[in-house]
Image 1 (cartoon, one colour):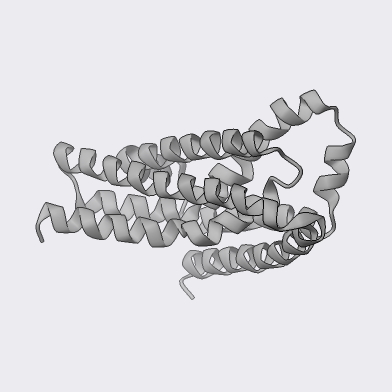
Image 2 (image 1 turned 45 degrees about the horizontal axis):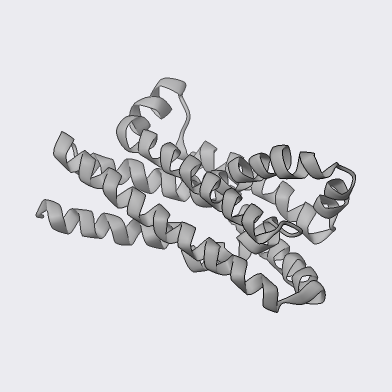
Length: 209
């Protein structure tokens, strides 16, 4: 298979795995209460962190997991548990309650940075699925030139995700308070189901079920 065709397949695989349309509404729920500019900052920071994570795994992924003795199955389980904690907060409004108790300065700095890193960059963007796909794709592109092509594909895929989140920010104006509350709880339920699926996939991979 030609390198160009492999890179095209890699872009398709990563785009499907990252799922920009599915991530956009989740981003809205996670950044509830933030201004448009704050959402852009979180989206940009989260995308850059995710890009760095996927790039590192594209180059050193197999070696890192092997050296640490960590399997993809174990990584899926850990990501699922983290995601479930976020889903719980979204469904029962714990996140909003905690945010109201903090100062405005804490929200714009510490809170925004925390959300950008977790759960946005990891595990929502650079989650177990994207990381495992990146490692598998890197195995099919062993040469240095091919790896550079894979890094470009990763950057392009993450850019699509970033644009999807920016568009989602504009849609927030049409939802209103009631719409945002309903959407947040609905997405919390979806997140909970997704987190359980992550754990189940991890268990199946670990025990070869």
